[in-house]
Image (cartoon, rainbow, N blue to C red; front, side):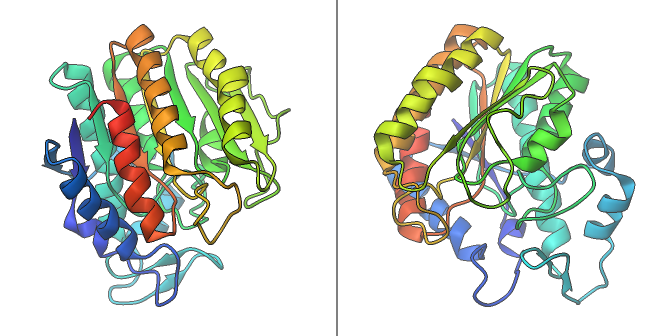
Length: 303
């Protein structure tokens, strides 16, 4: 398995005390190096404006990339641009593009994008929720445009609903979006009756749901939807903020839940997608949980 990352992703600095801190990625990288020494490491390239423009408006791209040099710009209460944010955002999206190209070429079957800022809250027109560009959406659009795929599935198990990813693809039948997430919780979307054009399947979970409810949602609702769609490529928004140690949510999961689900996703990919999976780091704000869960996730995928 390949891991795509870049030092630029550590240079996005939302400010002292912000949960989405560079230490998050540093913890993941350290844990993967120690826990899975067999991983292959590759440098994430910069995404091009044209690749990002497949899913984001020109105005939004300009906002992220053209902030005044050396200044901090607050987009909303949670989302901040720092002097290093533009390069980090381009690397985070570029990692997904490179990973999709690699798995579609047959050189590898699985990849993990160890990047930040995360992406799944960014809508077509707005950066929000710690997210600048929607990295997984950029990758999915690239797969459709450059590899002529007709069925790309996006799996999102971050504790927060990926409103941005749903917003971008809810009218695109070639993309299936399936998500489990805590509700009520930020951003307030992801109800079970939000179905797009039949290509959106949401499984909101109550606070304190725990392992049994989480696994049941995937076994009974989300994994069957994936199998029915028969994706040619599986993309994963891997947020680990559902862990019981996470300070921003209360789902009550443990690392073995992520290993279990990742193993099931790998099985789906073998049945339908020649094993092809690209996963993206999203949320997770306990460093201990990030270390444990990132290793469990990649181990479950077959690293």
